[in-house]
Amino acid sequence: MKISVIGAGYLGATHAICMASLGHEVVVVDIDSEKIAQLAGGALPFFEPGLTELLKKVGESKSITFTTEIAAISESAIHFLCLGTPQASGQLGADLTTLNKAFAATIDVAPEGSVVVGKSTVPVGTAERLAAELQESQKSLTLNWNPEFLREGHAVADTLEPNRIVIGANQESDTALLSDFYRSVAPNAPQFITNFATAELVKVAANAFLATKISFINAMSEVADVTGADVSLLADAIGIDDRIGRKFLGAGIGFGGGCLPKDIRAFLARADELGLGDSLQFLREFDLINQRARTRAVALALKELGDPRGKKVAVLGAAFKPESDDVRDSPALEIAETLATLGANVVVTDPRALENAQVKVPDLGYSESITEALRGADLVMHLTEWSEYRELDPLEVKKVVKNPIIFDGRNVLDVESWRKAGWKLLALGRTL
Ligand code: UDX
Image (cartoon, rainbow, N blue to C red; front, side):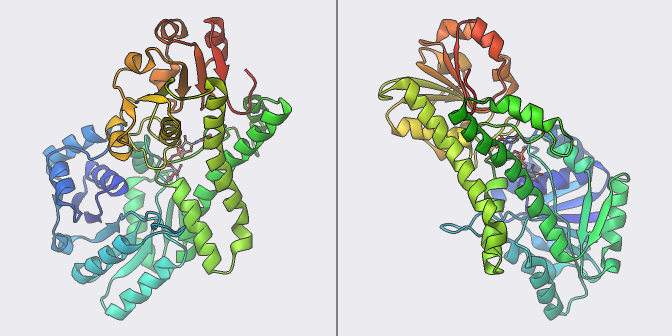
């Protein structure tokens, strides 16, 4: 099928490349000519495992084209809107400017009878508003809302083998084309055909729930700090109950990235607009618990370092999570920056995110070499659980650092082997 993808960011590029790999003819449109040139040249503007290889394959088969001209969508049957909806500056709510502009440009040139599909995460009520604009324009186009659930680092698999498809529309018959399209993409994925509000809410509610699980266990970690309990064992013991589940009960320095933090804030802002502030008040608390996890990590480091001035802190990890080069709202980078501001000599290393980290926080020390970052360290902070760091040999690392003290911000290191090698381990919610 001929389809177009408007917005070549993380979501759009992944969706476009994956759909092209299934044999669809895909036109990708973005106003950023540099990004378009880069993609057309076979390079990704971000790191995602497996996606560059797939881009190379579809590029050679010529099933994908990249352009800055919106008119290029004029032969497509489906147009996927994949625009970013970041947190608006100085506010909790989302900034829909680029989505609104792209929607207007799309309906202007989309051929009669085609389907416009919103994939961006939006405040509930947005699709209804856009559908009203579409009606006013008197074009015979259909609007569907189809949230995505892809996780960075697993985006290819999540797109090619989605665990669910959600399609929102004004009436069920409006969803026929997109529903058939996804049946060919993912025949086994259950489909949920809903109204607009439900489709929009599925996405934000899912992210709010994930954030809730993480902040819940980090609240327990605060309790554990005071009472002497061990939050990791607590998570194991409550998570074994499959009504609760162990996933997303990883206590530590909390969640970051381009989705969870901004999505719960946008949800809060929308709830306030709807007069539902009380219903989502808990999310405000969970945002605060998440922020506190970062300050607790800094406090623990300071307790160990004493006066941080002139002390070397080796930070393992800058990305908000492993298998990603994304440093948006990264707990690791924020902790590193705070310690540097307090006078510590911080050296950050990361297998993929150094370039982005340097752009965001230019004043920190950075090293591509794990050994150089660790050399002479008074304290090691393990903040993003890349397998490279989990697999470090504590005996070897001990030879390079000044003091064998490590803070495990993700609670994933093998405590016994580090302890046996003579390390002092620090963690939130655990006395090690
Ligand atoms: C998230 C959702 O999972 C995805 O479905 C949605 O489409 C976009 O937002 P992503 O931002 O890629 O995906 O990351 P995710 O794997 O959810 O992790 C988010 C953050 O939570 C990371 O910083 C991670 O380190 C942290 N986290 C995760 C924890 O602190 N503890 C856990 O137990 C799990």
